[in-house]
Length: 216
Length: 336
Image (cartoon, rainbow over all chains, first blue to last red; front, side, top):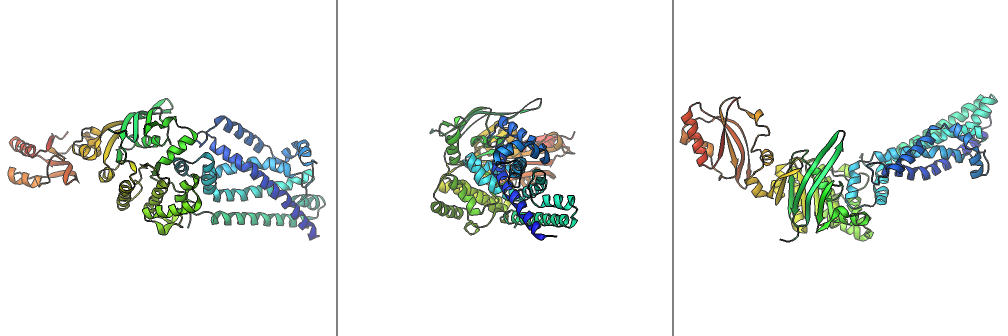
């Protein structure tokens, strides 16, 4: 077995996972904030907007990634230059992940005690100040935990990227390991994936605890 | 008389519920003068929380007016609302501190959002922590503090914006009696030294008695009685007030004694003296005290006592006459 192909695949996996996670958060975090503050009883209620945004998020979340990947081929070609490949797959990964991120973020914000938000309002905070100085810092441990969960989920999705000509550990395990019956490659690729998930989860828990000042 | 600092005019708050509506405030009018400590007392569900939350617009009344310095605050929007809220601070039963920020950062928060330069803000934070006696806890997190310390941080934070009014929403209800005393003393000190008008809502009579100058008794969304604390305590007129102060039983029927008895009401109309001892000596009766609930205010007894009555009509009349002569209100109570 050639270990170099494992390391190359690992690099490709990270190349897909990290930008997808990042871009998903760039879109999903503000969307999550909007979902929380615009709901009925939120700090900036806009029920119609909230219902529409919520419906879009639910719609995107309910399409299985492998289907979305295929459906998006024409769009991906326009956005990324080509429909398939390790880099191109970042686009469908992001489209699939940002609604998930938005719901995750929404959940984290919902954990913040409403009394703290009321106190901030009573002190004369603007909506933006409440989001930036109260909601996000108070939800930080939960947001970090959610970040780790989202990243491992996206990592899992990258395995399906092989269907769109993407590389990575998942693709290696399927094309080499399964199709060419190089089972050692399949197991090696899988073990590296497992270790990667473990590392992300451990780092997530570590920083979740480190940033939580409620327990000391 | 000068314009009151806060004036509520016919304030109403109605919550829609399935199949009808709940009236939390049924037309409340009151005036709060600058520099006083105004207490609003009532049983739970009387509407006190709704009332105080309307004053800084955490809740929006259904109808009526709230004037602060003559300005109708129900018309305020956006930046004007923010400016008003910086003049009217609030502290809460559950403290509501930022749990992920240190004590100093919590107190600095109102200064940060008002755009006060950092160096100036930090200096002010230390002054504020000194006022509440927590200079040494600046770098602690709220989770490391006791309940009383948390409320002190909340008070320092509420004072940061240099408010004219401090609203206290059951601020001592989550604290033990000792801590309650120290927080009340702090509120009184702040009122006297900084001239900040304080509005207190509570269900505890002791809180009112200890720091308030005037009091309103809220009952079922209406003001049952209002006036100076001494006056309201000494001449409690409303049934709601008498129930709150323990002069009337909360429920007359449940309080029936097993034997003929006499309810003696101490409503402050009498100097402190050994009434029962005198009764025993002068009327030559044996007095069996069935129950008693008496508190002291300005060295005068308030409350009620239930004593067993003799079967003999003449003896009973003698006791009633004796107590009436002492200036006490009495009422004979019979078993069911």
